[in-house]
Length: 393
Image (cartoon, rainbow, N blue to C red; front, top):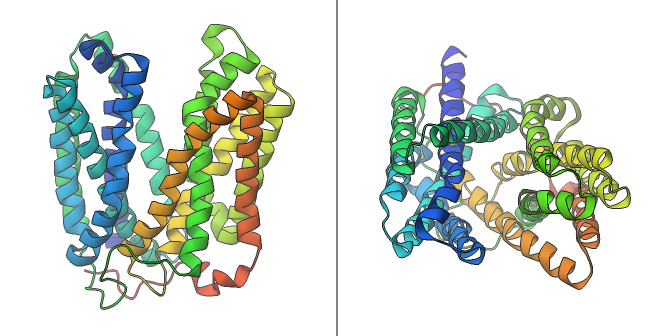
């Protein structure tokens, strides 16, 4: 158990590392916009490279984890993540920056799949739900990375200088953590072709993730716009909506595991969908500052456990190895993240932002419906972690 605890601490550090690296890049995006003289539309096109790279990487990540094991992939991807973060600071043209952003997105999602595969095995060792706490550390790292970015900007450090510091921190964390990463036994089934048709379980979980990530993407991109245009508070209060959502999602992930162990994953997913739907309905029907902030808090708590629980269920597929199963579910779910923000804009253009957010409220309710209909598709063996056969590697 002591070794298992050390593995959990090491893996927690790596989840933090991944979130810290991503948020460090994001905190300096305005500097890149100024450096290359990008318009809002050009910047939006540039940032699209991140999800495109992530999507491209999904089948590659599943294949790599299945054939080489998550330990090798985590170490390789962590080093590559640090290198390409610094490479972003070296770019001298928009083309170089765009290509680096795509590769940076690819590496980030390869880390995502490999870290979650390793986390599932640690969760099995504990024989209880702990996956959401790892995701909570990723979210918390976002605040830490943004804070360091703000400090670097105040000190007038360039993105390149900033990224050298972050990469040094990342490599130090990796050096300390890598001895405690374990090598999985070679899977004898569930591999083969990367792009395969998911079974009923993975399709259902993928759609739950699809709606969950659609809600997340909309909140990331449109919460501030909704507050500014619909609620119209004083300018300095506009960021409160995003902060409320992100804070609730991050903190919710630290309490999600305890509630999942108490009530079960199915009940938690049902509650999560209801919280998302209720929060957005509140935002739409009573668009004043106080109720909108409460609504965004509910949405944050609702989205907190959707992806961690989806991964936890998917990783115990009886048809596919964990790496392949996570890649299949992530592929379906990630389309929600890509489609959600444009959908908001399209509906807002035809009607208004309140109608757009009402549609996303329905997406949250769909999570509860998908979990509640034909419950047997999940199977009792998917509702709680399996007892790990051995905690030694």
